Image (cartoon, rainbow, N blue to C red):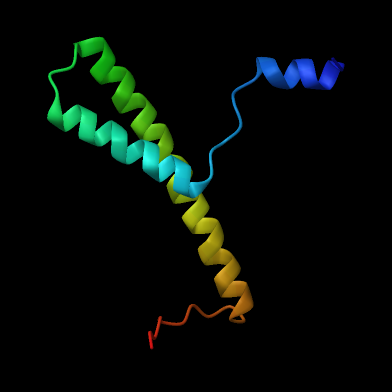
Length: 81
């Protein structure tokens, strides 16, 4: 195994896609709402949910910025068919 691969395996796991992050966030929220979780597990779920929410917000902001660039700096309203 190369040194870079070894160092990557020791760092945080790869950031999930927007869809996977949202899916996991929805599961966490459902679990927190629907069950009586121990306090430590509830706190860990909340921490992970906040992390996933940050990932989703960052990805949405990046896409919004790309749309602005594509629309020459102006965010246009969506007009469905």
